[in-house]
Amino acid sequence: MIKVFIDFDGTITKKDVGASIFLEFGDEERAYEIINGFRDGIYNATQTWIELLKTLVDPDEEKIKEYASGFEIDGHFHEFISFLEENKIEFYVISDGFKFYIDSIFEREGIKAGFFSNDLLFTDNGPKTVFPFTDENCDKCANCKRNLVVSLSGDDEFSVYIGNGNSDICAALHCDYIFAKDSLLKYCEKNRVSYYPFKDFSDVKARMTDLLGKKRLKKRHQAELNRRKLYMQG
Image 1 (cartoon, rainbow, N blue to C red):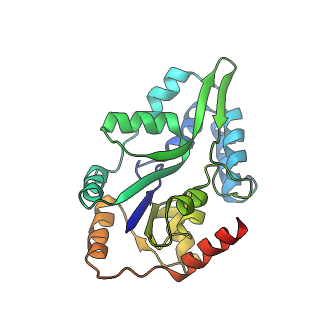
Image 2: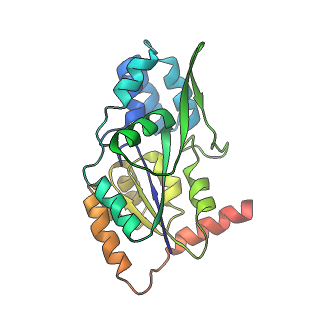
C-alpha cells in the first residue's frame, strides 16, 4: 500500500505563500534577515515564524487574507489528485505554513484534501501564531512533518514524499521515495540521498505511474533505519 505526503508552499503553490505574506506586509529587510537566519541555523522554524510576525507593519486581516488567497497552484495538481483517487492512494498535505490560506486556496480550487499545518489567528490583540503539531526537538519545521509522516504511515506501507524546501528535509528522510526540487533537491544531492527530481506534478504523476507498474516496491533502507530509530526514542 502506498501513502503520499505532499508539501504545500512552493510545491502545491508556485510560490511560498507564508514567507511572501511577511515580505509584503512586514518590514521586508528584516523579514529577509530572519528567513536567511533560518537557513543559516540561527533560528529554528518556530522562532522564525514568531520573529516574522513581529515584522508586520500592517497586520490588516482582510488585506492579508485577500492577498494570500490569490496565489496560483501547480497547473497539474488537480490531475495528480485525480490520479491518486483513481488508484485509491491515500494522501496528506503537510505544511509548515498556515491553515487560513490553505483553506482559502483549496476552497477556491475545489480541492478536498486532508492537511496538517500551523495557523495564524487574527485576534483583537493582533495576529497570533499557533503550532498544534510542534516538536521541541525538531528545528526544521514548526509543524513537525517527520512525526506526521511516521504516525500516519505503517511498516507495511510504502511512503512517498513530495517537497521543495528545508522544512521538508527531515520528513523526506523518513520516507521510502522522495520527489524533490529546489532546496530539498540540493540537500539530497549534497548528502547523497536518493531522490527523483520534478518540475511540476505531471512529472510526479508520470513517475508514480511507473512505480505502480512494478511488482514490488523496494523500501529505502536508510528511511527504515530512521523510522526505527524514532520508534525506539518513543
